[in-house]
Length: 510
Length: 86
Image (tube, rainbow over all chains, first blue to last red; front, side):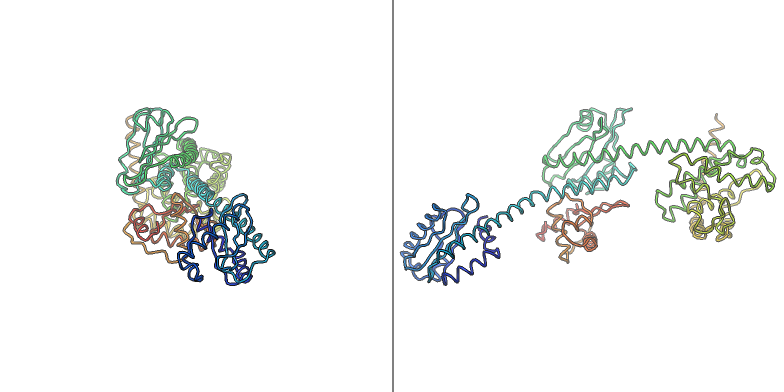
């Protein structure tokens, strides 16, 4: 430590300059650097290469006695001390002082000229100032070494916060939290349970094992209060064991538990690890609560949409099986296209809502027009066309449906600009509306109507393809045709037909 | 992972690896690393992607952010220890 300190001191540019000045002033000196207190003996291995006198043990003894005495004077007076060595050459020693402490000594001997008091005082001043500068640098370095790991930890917490708060999907969030716990705590596995208050149980919701990914089924549900996990949840208690840690997820009450394990070969967990896991758990609690609230909101939204959809069902006279299955089919086709086109989930959800509610505006159209089996006259058709605007107006006040409103408003626009209500053309039509237009037309063709037979999937696909660039967006049609070729559309139609059959059987029983 | 990692080739990659060895609990973005090391973010990004390709680092990704961290693969960590890097 002290030699590092001395090296660092002599490495400073100011000290190197001071050495040059002193070397020139005293002429060909031997340099000594002594760290810490005045030593009991001196190391002559370097000095004896220059000074013949100290090559003999007797000479060494005489020189050392005088040298140590001079150092002692310097220590006592805290001042530089000049002296003559046994062979009458000039020597001087400087105490290296930092505040009240003497950190070591700098000494020169074997000089051909004496050091003038002025140069000596200047040198002492320069050494002291360099020492102070070095002290500040060391202090700063120590401070930086102490602070940096904390800054890195803070930065990691911030990154983790960003990673876990960027999703509101619990199925995505909880495994992500588990993986991050393993990462940060160098754990082998992490499991997360959430409390089911009604059943008084802890349900495993995520398990990550970074060594063995096949162990995912090995975590079981447990009763509150039972076992280590159940007790940790019931009493909101931490458990720090050698190779595992259990931390409750606590908001106002315990909402779950995180357990992290290390492998047998790994270092045991320490208190700091528990602190880190607690901080992670606090972040996870906020993210989980947000995701749960979002799930609840989603359920409410879907409840609302399904209620509205059920109202529309009663009005859907074209489909003998009712409108909800039609809308589900349309939603499935629209989502398959959107997914294939790589739309973000933020854009897919409004499209799904719109598929269920695209005809909501029909509630404002007289029933005799909707039920009319023959061709509509121009006045009646104008009224039917209003359903897009009416639907958009009806749903506008529902904030959650805001992104779906433009899709509903424009789903009868045509790519060539001859559609309604605005006559928008090409990419000016919202993408969701262009997708829904294809899904809507496809659903109408493959569904049975009271006034015409249904088309097969292949027939409907050919029909839609023939209107690419006029009625429909060619890019959307291209993706749609790909899905047709891959038999995805047939799967969707079959699935919805089976669901219908199930509904019918259910109806029969009631 | 069966990858046999090669030694990091660039000075910046060595700096990054040293940072993660000294802070093995860290999860950091490329921008964060650039700040720590005082380098251009795009150079940090390139270097980190190279380290991910070689298996030294792994990523925690979302649509909005990529967090980089030291690998948890014991084989690679042992290899690093063998090279005097961990």
